[in-house]
Length: 183
Image (cartoon, rainbow, N blue to C red):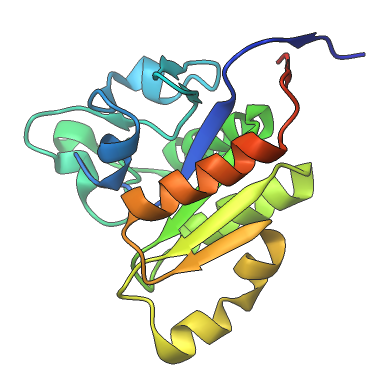
């Protein structure tokens, strides 16, 4: 039996990882953390309106974890990425999504394979999802992403992340109970 407390909602921001990218505009301060925090599914950042629950990246100054397929965590400062590291990132983020009250997904590039998986995890867990498609997602690509729109309670098109986030969060806040689940 889960207890409920009056808390800020825990939010997961699914989308491509980028140092000081669109997430930084929504969940200030900078989201660069050490490896322990980046892989700890219980770690959150207290933002003014919500608790940011992930994902996190390792905040090295030269952004070596921002290379493709490293998800902001693996391969920092010359260490090799491996299957075990990928599994740790997957498990931590799956648990973060499970603990979330709301998932906002921003699709701003066609190769958003991890984001598609994150939306699927949230849908399987019954977590409210909003999906926003940035200006670069057009035509046939937008049409082919119909399953993401079907999983979401709302979706937006041709908006920057900040604009879509505000609209989606406002809609989520109007519809959610004033208590959130304890994790």
